[in-house]
Length: 195
Image (cartoon, rainbow, N blue to C red; front, side, top):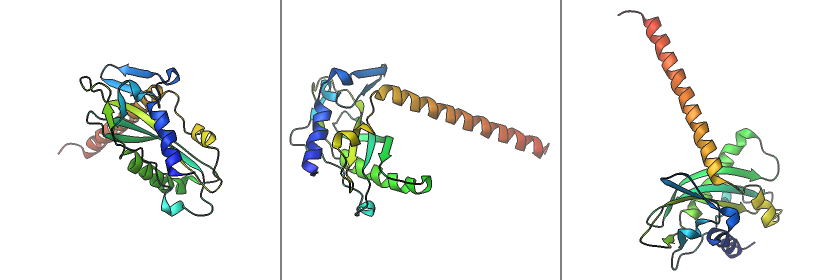
C-alpha cells in the first residue's frame, strides 16, 4: 500500500467532523477530541502534508508483521504537534514480552517522526484551542492485512475515557510509590536510632 494512500486515509480521518467521534471536555481547561473530530478547531495548514510513518528498518524483512500504534498527541496553539503518548499497540504473529519493548519503541519513534511533521491551522484564529487527540498509525507487514481490520486493532473509540483511566492509574501508581518511599524512610530512621 503506498504512502500516499495511507496519508490520504489518515487525513480523511483527521478532518472528518463526524458525530460518531464527538469532542469531549473532561475538564474545562482541556479539549480532548476523538480521532477525526478535530475539525471544529483545526484544519490542515496550507501546503502541509500528512506524513505517513515508515516501517522501522530493523524489522523490515520478508517476515515483518502487520502492526498498528494508537498515538495520542496534542495540537499546540502554533499548529505543531507534540506531547506524544502511545496508548495502544497491536501486531500480528508471536512475540515475547522481553523482545516487545525494543520492537514497540522503534514503531513509536516512527510514529512520532511522522506525526511530528504534521502542521495544522486554527479554524478560527481568534479562538485558538489546543486539542489532544489520537492517530491510529498502520504499519503494513508481509501479509498486508486489510487496512480497516488492521486499524481496528488499535482504534480508540473514546479517548477522554482512556486518558482519564491512564491518569487515574498513574496517580495510583505515584501514590503507591510515595507511600512505599515514606515507609522505607520511616523504617530507616527507626533503625538508625538516635544520633
